[in-house]
Image (cartoon, rainbow, N blue to C red):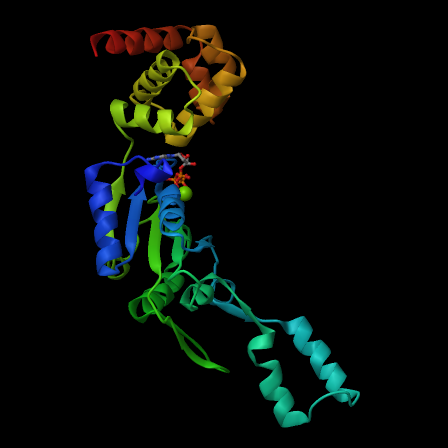
Length: 290
Ligand SMILES: Nc1ncnc2c1ncn2[C@@H]1O[C@H](COP(=O)(O)OP(=O)(O)OP(=O)(O)O)[C@@H](O)[C@H]1O
Ligand SMILES: [Mg+2]
């Protein structure tokens, strides 16, 4: 199913994904940046024809941005209208302005709603960026798939959403949350798998060039870098090289396009000159041996 969406993964990730769907458990994906954690949620949603609802986490994210908010401006307008005698009396005004028409639904609440075509995919992206109180709140929402709005009551999902959580592990996520989920560590792919991913995502690159790119990036990850390139960078780089009509890698071409794979000046400086040639030679050698 994932391969059909051009998502390439090994047996372990495929199995844990299958189990998460089968047992209706959230899937917790932790791993290196740019290794396809977010992408798998998109692939699952497209493959199953479900709506994808994304909650992008950040520091300071709170329930009102994640679950719901009252449309304050619209409430004020309604109250003013009532004051000038165009609308309902006090009591019914109160139920009216705290009714569904004035509710702004945020991702978590949207995910609890029935959708055409089945339960949505809820992507809770980069959970390590939020703080612990929000995590505790999330734990509650995910344990019984319901949220409570004081003025409206409890809203339960008719069918549990398919939940994918991702983390770059900038901090450890609490055990209690992890316990609810099935866990998988997404590391950098090996040569064969990365080549497969590149072929799926940039099929217009020649076999020879793709092999060189992947082999070079694989070697590069072995260097002492501040930030190692992910699969996303490999794909970007291939697209850059194609745009320049490059047929084969050379130290000059690499130096000109390094900004597609390395995003820190120290890393780029380290790679200039001799180092590039050395890595390229090693990459070529390992290709010959393969
Ligand atoms: N296994 C894979 N199969 C297909 N494409 C992949 C795979 N892994 C990564 N990609 C490609 O790499 C890009 C980046 O992946 P994605 O955004 O999912 O990374 P991520 O792990 O969420 O990174 P970050 O931690 O930085 O958010 C995707 O757009 C996708 O094209
Ligand atoms: Mg991501």
